[in-house]
Length: 119
Image 1 (cartoon, rainbow, N blue to C red):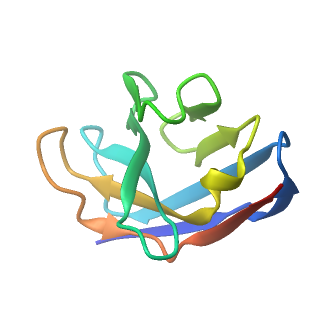
Image 2: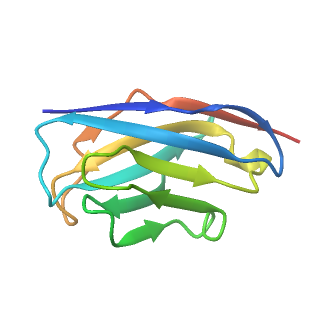
Protein backbone atom coordinates (compact mmCIF):
# COMPACT_ATOMS: atom_id res chain seq x y z
CA UNK A 1 0.00 0.00 0.00
CA UNK A 2 1.03 3.56 -0.72
CA UNK A 3 -0.17 6.54 1.26
CA UNK A 4 -0.24 9.99 -0.32
CA UNK A 5 -0.75 13.26 1.52
CA UNK A 6 -1.13 16.57 -0.30
CA UNK A 7 -0.57 20.03 1.12
CA UNK A 8 -0.13 23.59 -0.08
CA UNK A 9 -3.54 24.50 -1.47
CA UNK A 10 -5.24 27.79 -0.74
CA UNK A 11 -6.73 30.99 -2.11
CA UNK A 12 -4.73 33.13 -4.51
CA UNK A 13 -5.45 35.96 -6.91
CA UNK A 14 -5.21 35.47 -10.65
CA UNK A 15 -1.61 35.74 -11.77
CA UNK A 16 -0.34 34.46 -8.45
CA UNK A 17 1.52 31.28 -7.55
CA UNK A 18 1.12 28.28 -5.29
CA UNK A 19 3.22 25.20 -4.66
CA UNK A 20 1.57 21.90 -3.87
CA UNK A 21 3.40 19.06 -2.16
CA UNK A 22 2.68 15.34 -2.14
CA UNK A 23 4.38 13.13 0.41
CA UNK A 24 4.41 9.41 -0.34
CA UNK A 25 4.93 6.64 2.19
CA UNK A 26 4.55 2.90 2.28
CA UNK A 27 5.63 0.38 -0.32
CA UNK A 28 7.01 2.22 -3.33
CA UNK A 29 9.31 1.19 -6.15
CA UNK A 30 11.60 3.00 -8.55
CA UNK A 31 9.24 2.26 -11.45
CA UNK A 32 6.42 4.26 -9.89
CA UNK A 33 4.97 7.29 -11.60
CA UNK A 34 3.60 10.18 -9.57
CA UNK A 35 0.87 12.38 -10.97
CA UNK A 36 -1.29 15.38 -10.23
CA UNK A 37 -4.92 15.54 -11.23
CA UNK A 38 -7.63 18.11 -10.59
CA UNK A 39 -11.39 18.21 -10.45
CA UNK A 40 -13.43 21.38 -10.71
CA UNK A 41 -17.07 21.53 -9.57
CA UNK A 42 -19.34 19.82 -12.08
CA UNK A 43 -16.45 18.55 -14.16
CA UNK A 44 -14.60 15.28 -14.52
CA UNK A 45 -11.23 14.73 -12.96
CA UNK A 46 -8.47 15.66 -15.40
CA UNK A 47 -4.77 14.97 -15.70
CA UNK A 48 -2.44 17.86 -14.86
CA UNK A 49 1.13 16.55 -14.72
CA UNK A 50 3.22 13.45 -13.99
CA UNK A 51 6.80 12.54 -13.22
CA UNK A 52 8.76 9.33 -13.00
CA UNK A 53 9.72 8.25 -9.50
CA UNK A 54 13.38 9.12 -10.16
CA UNK A 55 12.47 12.68 -11.07
CA UNK A 56 12.97 12.42 -14.82
CA UNK A 57 10.49 12.22 -17.71
CA UNK A 58 7.88 14.83 -16.96
CA UNK A 59 4.46 15.07 -18.61
CA UNK A 60 1.98 17.96 -18.71
CA UNK A 61 -1.53 18.70 -19.85
CA UNK A 62 -1.60 21.31 -22.61
CA UNK A 63 -3.64 23.62 -20.39
CA UNK A 64 -0.82 24.00 -17.86
CA UNK A 65 2.32 23.78 -20.02
CA UNK A 66 4.60 26.73 -19.41
CA UNK A 67 2.82 27.64 -16.17
CA UNK A 68 3.08 24.53 -13.98
CA UNK A 69 6.19 22.55 -13.12
CA UNK A 70 6.26 19.12 -11.52
CA UNK A 71 9.43 18.15 -9.72
CA UNK A 72 11.09 16.26 -6.92
CA UNK A 73 14.56 16.63 -5.47
CA UNK A 74 15.24 12.92 -5.01
CA UNK A 75 13.45 9.59 -4.69
CA UNK A 76 12.70 10.23 -1.01
CA UNK A 77 11.49 13.81 -1.29
CA UNK A 78 7.91 14.96 -1.83
CA UNK A 79 6.62 15.58 -5.33
CA UNK A 80 5.94 19.25 -5.95
CA UNK A 81 3.64 21.06 -8.32
CA UNK A 82 4.72 24.65 -8.77
CA UNK A 83 1.83 26.61 -10.22
CA UNK A 84 2.55 30.05 -11.66
CA UNK A 85 0.39 32.59 -13.46
CA UNK A 86 -2.71 30.96 -12.01
CA UNK A 87 -6.04 31.55 -13.70
CA UNK A 88 -9.60 31.31 -12.31
CA UNK A 89 -10.10 28.21 -14.46
CA UNK A 90 -7.36 26.49 -12.44
CA UNK A 91 -9.72 26.46 -9.47
CA UNK A 92 -10.24 22.83 -8.45
CA UNK A 93 -9.45 20.17 -5.91
CA UNK A 94 -5.98 18.89 -6.74
CA UNK A 95 -5.14 15.25 -6.14
CA UNK A 96 -1.83 13.47 -5.97
CA UNK A 97 -1.78 9.96 -7.41
CA UNK A 98 0.65 7.10 -7.92
CA UNK A 99 0.87 4.10 -10.21
CA UNK A 100 3.25 1.21 -10.45
CA UNK A 101 4.39 1.76 -14.04
CA UNK A 102 3.91 4.14 -16.94
CA UNK A 103 1.39 1.86 -18.67
CA UNK A 104 -0.67 0.99 -15.59
CA UNK A 105 -3.59 2.88 -14.05
CA UNK A 106 -3.31 5.12 -11.04
CA UNK A 107 -3.99 2.92 -8.03
CA UNK A 108 -3.29 5.27 -5.17
CA UNK A 109 -4.81 8.66 -4.48
CA UNK A 110 -4.44 11.37 -1.88
CA UNK A 111 -7.33 13.12 -0.18
CA UNK A 112 -7.02 16.25 -2.30
CA UNK A 113 -6.26 19.89 -1.59
CA UNK A 114 -8.39 22.86 -2.65
CA UNK A 115 -6.95 25.53 -4.92
CA UNK A 116 -9.07 28.62 -5.47
CA UNK A 117 -8.02 31.36 -7.88
CA UNK A 118 -9.96 34.61 -7.65
CA UNK A 119 -10.30 37.00 -10.58
